[in-house]
Amino acid sequence: MPVCQIVDLLRRKVNFDYPSTVRFRCLKCGICCGDTEEKKRHILLFRKEAEQIAKATLQPIHMFAFELKDKAPYSYEIKRRVNDKKCVFFETNHCTIYSLRPLICRFYPFELKMSISQKYMFLFTKECPGINKGRMLGKGHFRKMFRLARAKYIQTEYSHRGG
Image (cartoon, rainbow, N blue to C red; front, side, top):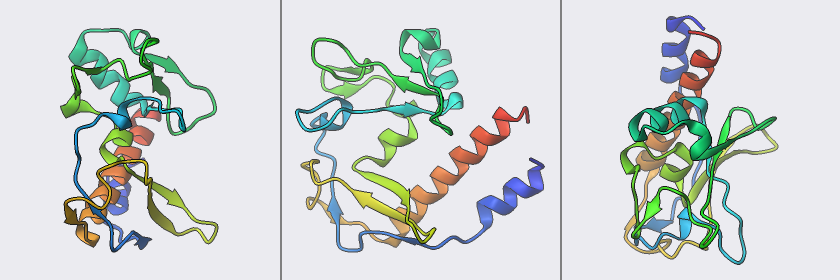
C-alpha cells in the first residue's frame, strides 16, 4: 500500500457509535489479564505487536504466544499460565510489558465492532469493576482509540504485504 494511501486512510473521517454516558477508571485489579469463571480471555496480537514484544523481552514469539490460523488480522494469542489462567506477562498484579501491551489490552473494557449496518461501534463489558467509576469518557477518548486501532491495522497490513 503506497504511503499516500496510508496517510489518506489515517486522515479519513469515520463515524462510530460510542457509549456516551459511560464512566471508567482502571482499578488495576487484573481481571482483564486472565480468565474468569464466566469468560475465557483471548489476548490477541497483530504480528507486529508480537515481534515488538519478542524483541523487548528477548524471547522468541513461541515462548509467549500461540500462532493463530484464520483469525486475521490477528496472528497470535498470548499464552496464559496454567495455575491462575493469567497472561504470562501479568506478574505481581502488574503488566511487565505495559508500554508494549497489545491493542486489545489498551482497549479493555471496550471493544470495537462493526454493526450489521456496517457502522463501527464501541461496546463495553460490565464485568470490569472500573466501569461507572472515574470520569465520563467523551467522544474524544473514543476517537483516539479508533485512530489507534486504525493505525495498528494499517501498520499490520502494510508490514504483512512487505511494505
